[in-house]
Amino acid sequence: MDIKDKKIIYHLDRDSLQSLTKLAKKIGVRKEVVRYRLQNLIKSGAVRNTYIAIDITKLGYTYYKIYIKLHKVDSIKEEELIAFICKNDHVTWAASLEGSFDLAFTVVAKSVNEFDEIWKSINRKYGEFFRNHEIMIFTSSHEFSLDFFLDKQPNLGYDSLLFGGGHSTYKLSDKEKLVIELMNKSPRISVSSISKSSGIPPSAVRYIIKKLRREGIIKKFSILIDSSCMDDTYYKVRVPIKLRNFTDQDEKELFKHVKSHPFFTIYSSCIGKWDVELNVWTKNNKHYREIMRDLINNFSNIIEDYETLFVSKQYKCKYMT
Image (cartoon, rainbow, N blue to C red; front, side, top):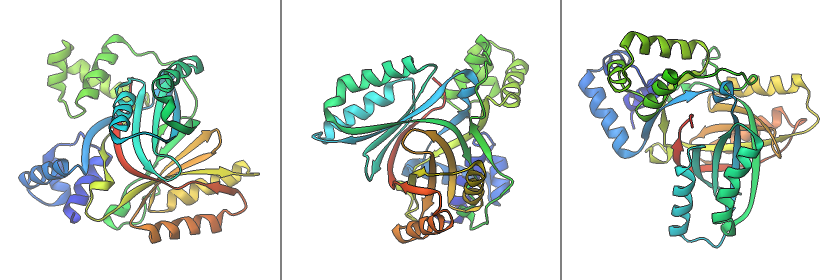
């Protein structure tokens, strides 16, 4: 993967709706070159699909994440389990891990009882293969730029609050639901295609999308990147962290440090065994140890423990039920 491929990924991560013409201008190549390279990135699996990031907490939902350690399960049964989990409309993200847990997925639900029913439906069918599990509630999540892809220092002005900051009671209209549904199926779908499929005039479709972005419902249009398919061996690590005796100021300083570091890309606040979860992009084990050693040295007074969970494969990324 060369610098042109990295630029394509970088810019599509920021906005996957932009045209190939616009993308080609940013990279400094012809549109045909961008099309060819993007097709190769998709074919290799490095770019798996596009998606809409939606702040569903504004619609009254809560994010739950489940980590599972498997046992006595063969590859066929594991694939069946993953397919069953991904088929559930309330599951928005799922991935295989290496570390203390083998599998993780997020569930969105409007109440604890609704989540309980979803979890029980999975546990009843496959619980015999679960050695142990942990459940966390995610209260907020901030995403930072992939500036390291371009060997740039992090853009401290870029901070996308993916979700959190308090629930609201925004109620989607039937037309808004239909537009989101169509865009969820094909995030790069054109306004004219949405209009044709929904019967909503193009001007109204544009207004709905603009309104949902203004209200903070639609956060961004992006791509699902599979680091395991990259030649450079960049890979993702999920790092749940347990804090101790920390103040609001301590947490602000931790957030500031993570945001200013080029290889941390997501900072999430949680309720459960862990208080924070970080997403790290790293080149190799040595690089990862250096990143974590620096973090621990700076915050040894509040970091009590952490886990290292390598993301070996992502299966699903969908923000809407």
